[in-house]
Structure formats: structure tokens, C-alpha cells
Image 1 (cartoon, rainbow, N blue to C red):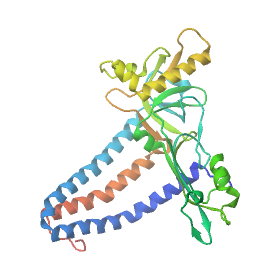
Image 2: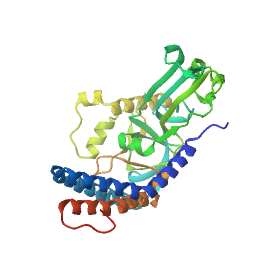
Image 3: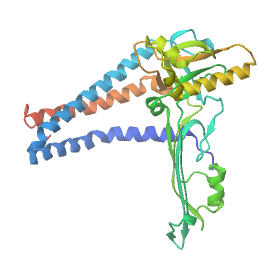
Image 4: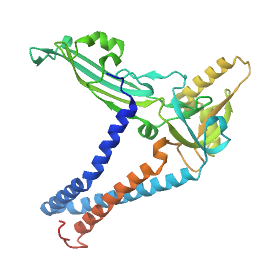
Length: 336
């Protein structure tokens, strides 16, 4: 059986998203109808539910407008590789690597990655029943989160902080219990006797990873700057954004600054120079608080159309529910 790739999982996810978009209008209609009937039964819910529905409507519209605005801004920014990048605001294309330059390997699917969140359970089958004792169960829950990574184009690299939004936009969910067991980490294979899977030995009950692959193309909209190994990333970021310099305690407690120091130390050692050497870094654009990171395919209209299409589906139904709850309009056949 061939080794699974994150691209295959991603394709399955896209198909599921497409199917969800088709059935969403029907599901949402019954959801809205249920809410309306609940307020008819419990009248005191009408006002708080109407407020919640109004907030939902605003959120749907703002999300669609934000996505459109972000796409327009990306379209107005030149896209380059690091080797050809000029200082200043730019959109860079590349892939992600850990700060030490060495890719991690996800423990369940063996895919090179920047970070992973893995959950695994295998149970032993005995006379058709599953034992729950310690000898009949192997479980793994392991998480490695990257607070900063390197953006690489295969030649040059730049220091790039990550936050929860960045991780969400770049991660891939892997979930397939029938994947080859020889892809499991060695210690897991040894515990379950992987050659017995599917026979009279162990059965995989759960096998899920959420990873950020190393070879996943991303686009980063940021401010490209060259610093030295003697500089502080947080201090450079504060100066660039017009903020006060960070306190020494903030520098000491910042995971981002700690990773920056480790990266600078590695670059200094690799250069063999006694004086500070130059390093590339990515800062938030002025006027923004975060760096923009998206999958390369999301930089086209594909993701924008999906988000706006979702708004087109949800906004009219949400508006209708709000107008019905507030009594502004009456019932429209064949709606509730």
C-alpha cells in the first residue's frame, strides 16, 4: 500500500467541503425553522435570539467583506521568492521549515512537517471482544506546536512567527485507520506488533494527526527586512510598528524571541564569523497587527468564492429569520 500524502487528505477534505456547501441551505433552513418555533413556544427567548441572529448576520457579512478585501490587497502586492525579494511590503512564496532547519516527522503517518498534533489508539481483540486492560491498549497523545518557523524558497530563508490563525490556515487533518502500519513511529510499531494488525492481534481504533506539512506552498504577505544576529526580533517589530520597545522580561518570556535567538545562534555558528551576520525576517505590515499567511491555492479566487458563496447562502436566510423574529414581515410561503 503506498504511503499516504497530505495532498490526498486535502483533496478528500475539499470534496467534503463541496458536499457540505450543497446541503448547507437545507440544513440551515431547518435550523432556522427550529429556532423560530422554539421562540414561538418560549416567547421570552425572542429578544435574545433576535439579537444573536443579528450578530450572526453581521459576522457573516463582515467575514465575506474581509475575505474580499484581503484578496484585493494580495492582488495589489507583488509576489516574489526570497532570493529575489526587495526590502519592504511584499508577498513571498515558499514552504515552511522548523527553526532549526530540520523537518519533523509526524509519528502516525510519517510525513515531514513543521508541527503536529497526533492522537492514536490501538486495542487488542480477544475472542471477538476488546479488552480494556493496560496490556490490551496502546494510546498516544502528542503535540508539537511551532511558535515560529522559517519560510524557505529552497535557497534563502526568513524567520516567520506563527499564531493560531496561521496554523489553522496551513494545517492539514489526516485521519485514516487503515493506513499502512509501517508508517507508524518505531516505538508504536513495537508495542502493537504491527504485523498482527487485522489478524488476531491489534486493531487501530483511532489514528488522527493535524500537521503543517513542510512541502505545502504558502503565500506570506508581510514586511521583509534584513536584520543581524545581534538584533532582537521583538524590538525590531516594535520599532517597525511604532510601538515602545519591549521590556527585558517580555523578551525573556517570549517563545517567539527564544526561537529567534536559537535561529540567530545557528546562523552565527554556520557562518563561522566572529561578528554578527545578516538574517532575514518577516514583520507585520504597518497598520496591521498580524502577518498574512495563506495556502497558495487560497490566494486565487477559489477560497474567496467559497467564503462569499457561503455568505450568499447564509445571509438571506439569517436576515429572513431576524425579520420574522422581530415581526417586521409576515410569513412567506413556502417558508416558515
